[in-house]
Length: 390
Image (cartoon, rainbow, N blue to C red; front, side, top):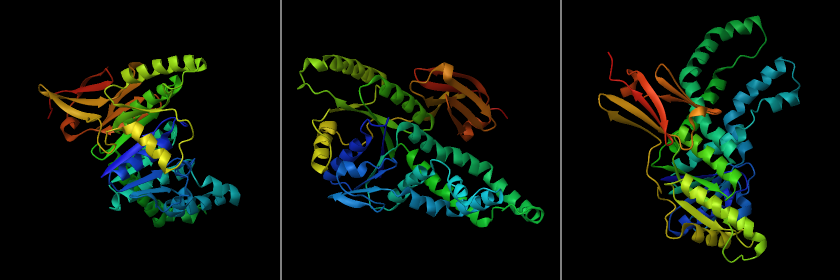
């Protein structure tokens, strides 16, 4: 089973790349599903077909779908939403406002991502491809399973016990609605689905992320940050796709400066993202829409490469023995010392880069050891732990 995620800045061609790659794999004899976590829902436009929540076969062995996020939201959030509406109603919020406030922004995209667990567990597909939302939303969504897991492991059981004990007393003293067992069960179901997604995405044997870029300065800068943040949360990036490169056939002098700038940016991509393979696709003469056009793009993009393979083998997080101690290594490409914070709280290592933070649960071999030093060298955070203490 393989899962391939395509992400990048909005408008760089993620959807087209994902659709073309799906057809390439299906033509090679694999059973493929391609789904979209992008609220823009342009996957249907790429295939030139109407898509819905149920996967339809757009080509032999290739199925595609666009999630009805509201439907998934109702399935997973219904009980919690109803309780929140009761709370807002008790607080004097109007019915319409309560309905809107009961849905946390971004939840619909989050539930679209949980579809990945169902596709992978169905046994119907060899490869599942995900057309991700633009990078800011993707990073937020991919970090949520990790953040929610921290809450569910530590605070959720305590909250549930406290509600069971204190809830009857609160009900006698005030009319505020108290969350019942159905609300907590809904929360547990949501967590279980997200935890399934987290296990899939964090397994480098299963999941690879492909960064999609254009040869433009701002796009490249965002891709560098995305690469760092994905590595922070343990996601395996194994390729960079460069779209819309000016073809050699264009000789008009008007494009001379554009071509010169693209050449500089392409060299930057090659140097900065090494050793990741750089896959290239030229600027097409017309919109890449429909199965035939997508197949042409796939041929140019992949050539003799099998898109389902792990194009780079590596682990973003690993532990190595050094003398009588151990060193925890976390790959953080493009991270800078000024924006990096490392601390420890009990059995957890806290790593922060810019606005993104992650609590890394230390393996058993490191929990009884003290941190001696931490350093960042060539995009790799090295945290040295002392010899074992009693």
